[in-house]
Image (cartoon, rainbow, N blue to C red; front, side):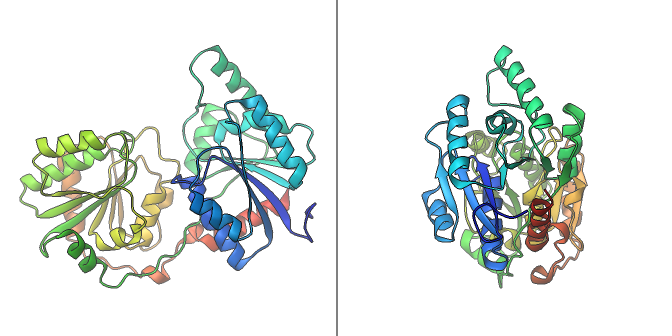
Length: 379
């Protein structure tokens, strides 16, 4: 395929919510920056319909991307169709790549008849639309699935788990692929454990137990605290670090008081120094609920590639396991005492990991980019 716009380069228009803290958009940003550095074989266009971090939009533009910000919400579907078609008419992309699961089907209808290839990427294991329950939602689902069946050239799933869920709940598409997110190989932080302990006043004989994720019921930070309470009752010395924001934050503060964990719990919130926390902790504890299953579990991948021991639940697919890592999956409904026993055993198991030479397998950013470029060129 040869681009309409540019000297042999493909032009791909990505339709995204917005470049803020979302995992999808941050993965796209990483991939774009890596592509410009290593390949530079695509003209990147982004159409955002939600809120974005202005610094990220500025970075995208400085590095050569074209960014369009929709003046209308995607919920105003007719107006959004008109805007989307106007962007396509002006930029003449070879491919439109949409990132909103079932919602993508609704606005792909607006591209009927356009001489371009259409891709929808499914990132989650939930069959939902941001529409109130009722006749309108049921009709919208019917339209969305019709569009995904008849108006889309390729459907991409971010994991086998997401693919299987989609097949079970919807249909088996004529053409699909499973392509993982790519992650950047981290740099090893010298004396990360000493730096982290010094930063938060952690004593030398205390373990650092880390949670990273949104503080919501699905990620299950409440069970994280309950497991910490079991450890304390057994005389284990530790500090538990919560890295994330969410609607459970006030409840977690109250629960920490009830469980007498005020001195053991450190609530950091959002940070850009995630690698320091992964490398500086003794174990990453992620007791996510089993249903719905995590689409991929990128935090679990990131924890492993930063050399952390990982104790997680069967709400995360085993396909995130990296070669040479220490990772264990437990039933999320097991008693907290069982989780604590496994955690203690892992803490006392010797483990070393070569961070800068780790085998990221299919999660390597270079391998991921090659897979996407191959897919684009095959359409």
